[in-house]
Length: 380
Image (cartoon, rainbow, N blue to C red; front, side, top):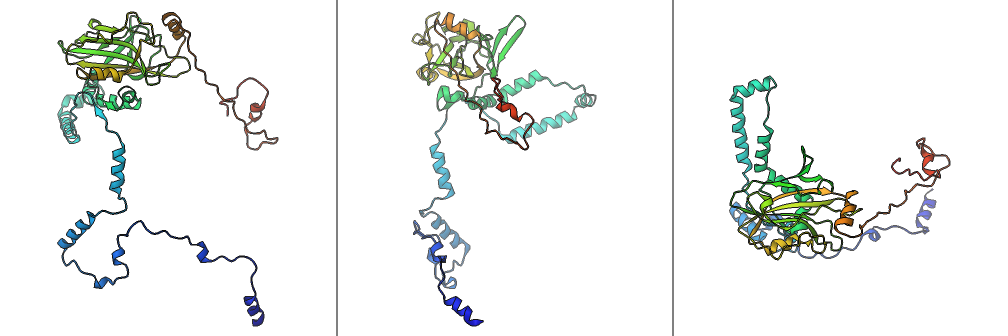
């Protein structure tokens, strides 16, 4: 039995054999010496000993300062930080209390409330009432400006109006559109307002000193029909004494929103600037009435750069608006032009090839393949 096995081992084998050398890839030379190359092939016992921890720390610090060919985690973080452009704050400086001080004040307030017998009795009898107006006023002073700033960043308000600049809206700006004699529609930070509801100038209020001067701007960065980077100014009032908006100089009279059909939601942004003194707006003055889109073309950043020595943004509010039937009358009667309409052609609904004997399909499986004009979009 041994002879056949020897013959079988000596006989050539047809086909291709796999070898370990063929499966290995050729390694490229490293870009530089590795950290432990100096100890390669040396006896550890023959190396020089540090003898003290102080000498070891000195040698380790000297080695860490030597340049290396590889990048550390700090190097990668520094390169990423250098790529990010610095954001310029063009608003008023805002003091933000530290977390430790807030926690300490909150702890003291809780202790005082626990010692108050009237609060304890009202809470036990479920008659405790929270003054929401006072809570809102406190929120608008402490945390409100930072919340509004985060919402405005989310909607891209600073990016589209001021480029790489931002500001904290320290002055609460309250804007209301009248809806009849008893109801008003407030403008917050991104809520919906229809063009018919914003057809007349709103009521704007804010806290201001009597001898202070302000400028109010209403602009639309999403509605320009020809230039992508330009805006349409809808309202511009300058040299407002105190908070009396109607007593200011109307540089550009109020114009209702006119978002084009098919362009989705537009942002209409109110910005309140505080003036250092009286400003001559002669170059920014528009005719009254101004029904020309060319004359209403506007850029907030250019306007701010012309008067940056005298203007500081302090308040912010904005709403969203989309097309409705009343916009057609604005184009035809006020702007005296044909209404632009942007349409989106929805692609036909894709249906996979019909199976003769569908398995595991719903009972209405054949409805998607019927010859009918009724759309089955959204059924499946």
